[in-house]
Amino acid sequence: MSLLKSRSTAKIPKVYTFRRPKLSVLSWIVALLWLLVALVPYFFMIGFGFKGQTELFSSPAWKPPAKWDPVNFLLVLQGTYFRALLNSIIVVVVSMVIVVLIASSASFAFARLRFRGNAIIFSAVVAGLIVPQHTTLIPIYILTNKLHVYDSLAALIGPYVAFAIPITIFILTQFMREIPKDFFEAAIVDGASHSRVFFKVYLPLARTALVTVVIFNSVALWNEFLFAYVLTSSSNKRTLPLTVFDYQGQYASNTPAIMAALTLAAVPLFLAYFIFQEKLVNGVMAGAIKS
View 1 (cartoon, rainbow, N blue to C red):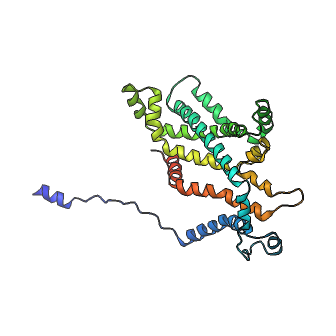
View 2: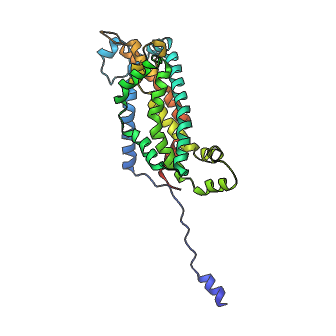
View 3: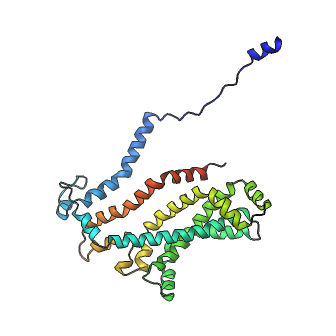
């Protein structure tokens, strides 16, 4: 009886449930203000693209177009836009495939294999992050001429891969170190080789991080201007950021057409973000929170 009484009078532990924190009115106001600040450049860029030259210089910059005429966008689409779009896709996709193959395998070695000079080599690779990219412009220009790849897409792929590898190895190595080592040891005990463990275990587990680094690097390479400008000269080798030169003259420029070209160049990035935004957010959170 006493046992039943003690059980009945025992305190039941309180169960805590996670609740999404409520945003205050001030937080919403700050968020909306930040959204407006972020959208203002796009408002001007798109609005200028629909204006004519006369209206652009005769009306206030903040005033919407009197007539939303898509003539500038049609002019860009009838020019070298699609060729430049194809060049950008080829350069970014090929560069990212090479970067992922090299950086993921190197990150696996740095994270799980023990060999002499592991920390030193990793530090040397990550040290590439502190090298200003534009200081290598002249040596890379000379090298591309000596290799006879100047004015080709191959001249861009090499530097793009070199610039993306340090940050990619740094992110992937830290992510793979967070994967429990028990997976690696269990696979080795079962007789799997290092390459099999890498392709069958670590690559699938690091899929979110891979998507994150691919999106991060792709945006940077997609918008890269200076190396594409220096290492190419033909109009059929230009990437999207260089299409603005089609509407730039020696003494004047077609500013509405330039804004239309910039707007169309940003469209693929927005589409890619909306498609992969969940992967990107998950990758950022996975890298920020230790398991």
